[in-house]
Length: 109
Image 1 (cartoon, helix red, strand yellow):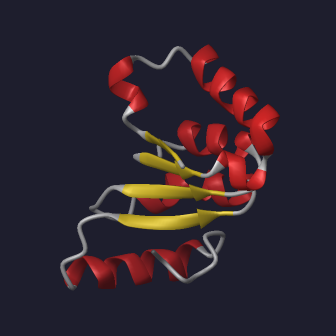
Image 2: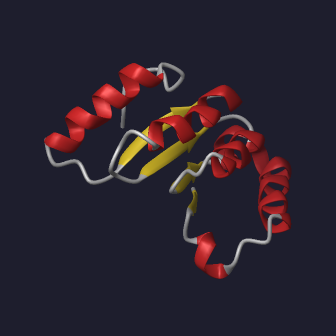
Image 3: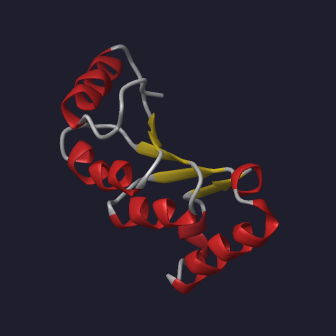
């Protein structure tokens, strides 16, 4: 996982490229808001490994990360949103018509 603000695309990419050289095969970035999630598109263009978005606080951030081309999501809906909002997140993902194959992108803790 990177320890740079995801919004700081230059530093985040720099750190990921260093991790790639060290043998890292997958990277996780924190998405604390929709701006972070939108940055995934630009980051992906400059790296060579899959990127996982660590989603906090709002399912809309997860949907933005999906639109930005994230390779995988890690979300913990019950910890942050409670059961009611967790169901809302899953329903929104279902409306996007994800196939069973695409559901493998999501990790719900």
